[in-house]
Length: 133
Image (cartoon, rainbow, N blue to C red; front, top):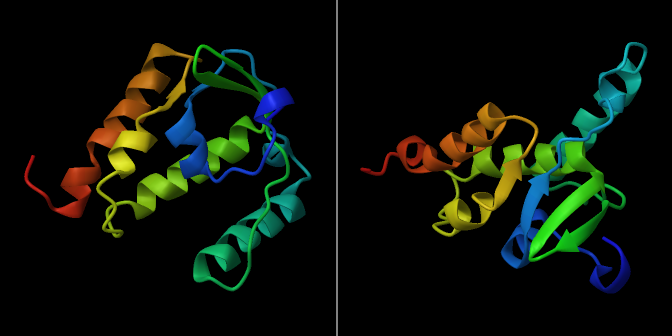
C-alpha cells in the first residue's frame, strides 16, 4: 500500500477495510514464464509450508492506490489473487461465516466473465460447506 495507507495487511484485513478491484491493465505473470520452474516450485512450497503452520509467509509489498473506498493494486495482483483463491478454497472447511462477505469484496475488472467468476465462487461457499441455500 502507499502513502497514508502503509502498513501490514492480511488479505482479510485488507478486504474488511476496502474493496479490491484488479484493474484491466496487468503485466504478465512473472512466475508463469518459461524457465521460471524453480521460482514456481519454491513459491508453492512456501505456500504449502505456511498452510501446514510450519512457517510464516510474507509476500512482499503490494503497491497500488485507494480511490473512493476501493483499492486498486498496480503490483502484487497475482499474489492477492493467489491468497484470495486459497481463502475461498479453505472457507468451507473453516467455520467462517463472514468469509463470503469479505471475499465478495474482491473483483477483477479485466473482463465481465472474470468478475462473474469471482462472484460465483463466493456464492458457492455455502454449497461447498454443505449448507442449504
